[in-house]
Length: 577
Image 1 (spheres, rainbow, N blue to C red):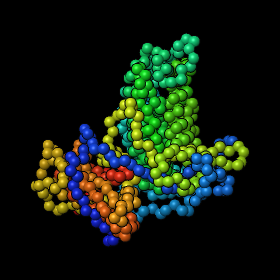
Image 2: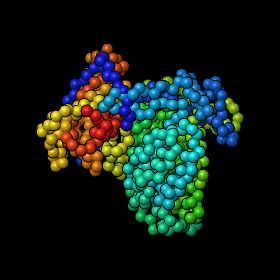
Image 3: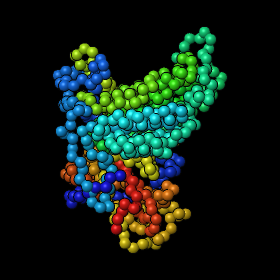
Image 4: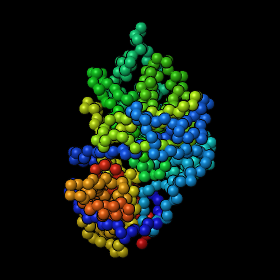
């Protein structure tokens, strides 16, 4: 949360809102049968490609020109619209100035201001990492912090053994804060119930292959080598871990979407196989479709992913090279490579130099060439588009996003087992989760002087815990409509549909006390639409909180057409009379 100054332009139009007729939004208990969401259509009209160029010693190569690069999409030459080199040793003159401070009782979800260096993130994944290795990662990363260049801004995330993503430390260049975060209890250091067989040292150390049998070519064949592995259980565990990882990456993409500039995510993970079959030979899960959606969101948010397998040589030391834990890592590394290549990052494995891998990731993410171009396909194109970049100089290595989908494929395999997932708005409205910035907005909060005995209309309070007297709060939104999709219609107007909501949580135990959700379906003449794009849209909403005590407001906006979302969390102690 950032508190700064907001000036509400008088030219902003006020949209009318209608109450949602579905039950009040509960972030803790998703509805049993949610309505079918609209089909997402996100068309890419500009492709941005970051290219990291290194020499034979792995050092960044500087001072190349646009003429040195040959770019092709689907085999056809592409002529960039823009080209720029970014260097860690030079300031970016075009970085926008920090946003001005906001007025009292006004809050924004637009994240940290842009700076010369990219934003870097650490994700410590306990869901996919054995507990013994988790402790090693913490120690190596504390040492790594001391090696960071001045001004490097990092955030630290933790993915718990049960799949909960936590922002342990927001973006900061303070090394002491980063070290404190790496020792925080928020990083849940415990054994995951979803761990692969053989990852824990107490498991059987080595599972020998069938004598004289050729090397198996599938995960199912590897597991079938031993009767000690419950193949169905392994499938279920891997399916859940894949879903948790996809959810975490999606949350991080939405969280960073409104933050300007490039972001680099260093993800310490043991990963998971891309797909797996159960003992009956049926496809247990296929992580491909959902992971492609997550990678598409990361691309849109300008996030390059650098997965690092921290198990590395420890697995080889404890196991024979033909053992299951070692051989299954081939499939897990396939997942890491796929995500890295899809976002322009690089995967690191088979090394114990974790700090070195992280430093390489930062170096690659801070020294690169950025070019953009307009694709030549039509808007209804949904295919995978392959990108090829070449430099006519010997001995150079290029790292860049190799493909993208104009419309991320949303279908999942019919036989896949799916972990229950919340909708984008439900996820955004959960207490303590990341604050997505795909839709940017400011919200001013006013408080009535007197207490009230009756609830406001459109409030859906829990009667067991929400007792009078109440305090009425009025929320005044200013929403950036550039994050909301409006489509032209035959009548010449622009039509959109989005919802905005506020939840009230008990700050002590996180219990949901009250909520209000409203929907807006504006139909705007072209002139009004253009005006609102420039000045924003004003909306109002009212919510009740108990008259005494400390509470947390979670405020969110969700575009029902594109599924973009924005949210912010505000303690009532920050709202002053």
